[in-house]
Amino acid sequence: MSIEDQGQIFVVGAGGIGCAVGYGLLAARFPVVFVEADVHKIRWGRWRGVEINQHPVLPAQFISFADWQPPPQATVLLCTKCFDNARVLARLPSDVTLVPIQNGFDPALEGRIHLEGIASFVSECEPGVPYTRITRRGHLHFGFRSDRTPTNWPKFVTALQSCDLFKVEVVPDILPFKYSKLMYNAAISPLAVVTGYDNGQLLREPQVRRLFFQLLLENYTILHEARIPLGKIGPFHPDHVAQILHRPWIARALAWAFYPSLRGTYCSMSPYDLSEGRTEIDYFNGHLIDLTDEQLCPLNRRVYNFIKRMESERTVPSLEMLEEIGLHYASSEEIISSL
Image (cartoon, rainbow, N blue to C red):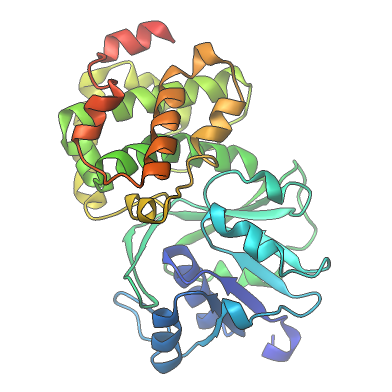
């Protein structure tokens, strides 16, 4: 298959996922164009290319988002944070194939997309440069928002299956995997925003870890009561995770087992966005709240309201913020009995 037979791929957002996926396509000889708003990443990318730890640098084409106008029938891989989606959508011709590879649920994408990706691997991009580290191995799932198996997958999906950075798995319905990822992200990300902690610290500090377990169990309960099927995106299926959370000593032991590989890593919803007065809380916990009633989401509601206040006040994250929320005093037994 020659480059001339392949359509041009635009990767919008040269962050951890965008760099990893774009690198995989470049390695498969796809003509990738990175679209980025960060002028430092653009300069670095044009000079050096895109790089992943322990892999050779690959030359790459970078263009400023301000100057980008995708041609008709282009393929656009959306690797931005959800709050940037509206700006991207405003640029797209109606016949562009849009494929989000991002966490969270954005109502603006409803009816606009069919194929989606969701990553369970962790890719940490250095600030200001298109250089990323794969800090936790995992899968990249591709599927449709329906239970149907296509006769032919897009060529870029097939090409990524030869990538040695992560394993690509194609599934007929992406939503069970996307909701499983939401279950985790809507527990990890709010606590990272409030405290400023990385993913490893959330598992190490007892009061934060306890609140993480509480949120994770509440998230599972919301999805279970909404009868939303869940897929396996990590070592355990969400049903098994819920059983583990009802046995706190097993949950604590597993937290310590996962802690080393999560140190220094963050989810897409990070505390650094607070300085700009925004987070992805509406696309994470806000979506879960919309799926259920007040009785099933007390923790999500309190965390959501608190982070919205932090956004408006541009509050500096700290561990002391947990005391202001007033949640970490609840015991695991109390939260379990309330569900």
